[in-house]
Length: 102
Image (cartoon, rainbow, N blue to C red; front, top):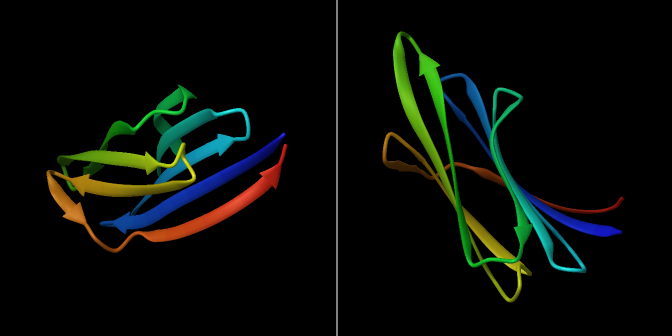
């Protein structure tokens, strides 16, 4: 099955934050939030308009709330992601588009 995947990556205080969004030709979708290589939130299902993923980063004795909001249009053919840490939009995420056969 052919799968399309998009990732957004950023670094927050030395912690890697990755948001993945994928979809295939029969409209199955999935999203996940990965912090420092560990999946902390994940959704799978059929095409929807938006998803929200949540996690936490612990740094210097403080806990930071991470939220990723993914939206799509045209049945997932276009998607975008906003990543927030402690309610503040992080604007320096790197976007990676990919397609793979699986």
